Image (cartoon, rainbow, N blue to C red; front, side, top):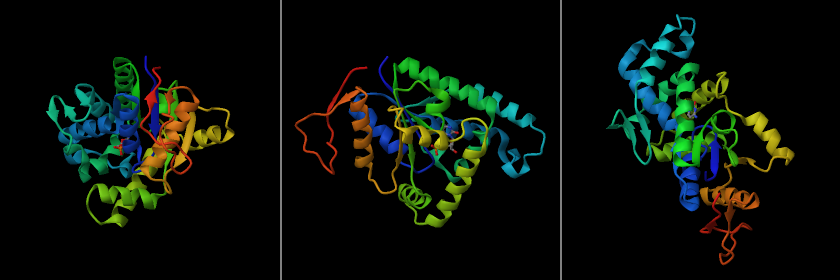
Length: 259
Ligand code: DC
């Protein structure tokens, strides 16, 4: 088994960029678990349409959750450089505003999460390790990860990044959407964001396989180099000594130490 690197954090914190770069540098496959929840959401929207309850309507009969989980259990979801739902390429379809609005509701269904968490573990075993990004990877999906990174950033900079990604200028709208999703993602019982515990553990310095990085003031290269430095420290990676250090941190590319 090669190393497993877990990357958790809220929307727009830079998880995907970091995961892709780390995958490349370490020669590991990358799994975007958010894309799995999004693909599942696409199917749920197709089946439930406007019947899908909003979080405000929580007092309704809960049987829809079991129905939704059953529908998702039947789906084949493949996530690599493209995302496929029952063989159909849905890479672009999972990034629509409608999916953005509904995905947190779908992801809050415990029995559906159990199903996807189990698929994510199977992916890790089948790929013999990897870089896995999401919300609950270091806490629920794979607590034995060799390194657990929790990425954060101010809501302003996260909204700005998403606005650039989506090539639209409505930062305020994106900010309020991210804020709403943060609240939903953080308040649910299963797979809640691990910030308090992780921050305390990382700050204690006792657990060198846990890092909390606030990327508000750092670009993607800085964050990558911080993570690579930690991976070197725990013996999973070796910097090439020929590279010129930048900002006091040596730069990649370097050699991976096989796990
Ligand atoms: O990372 P993302 O924005 O594409 O994630 C989409 C949604 O899926 C987000 O609202 C949180 C949820 N999610 C989750 O609950 N657990 C994960 N491991 C990954 C994503």
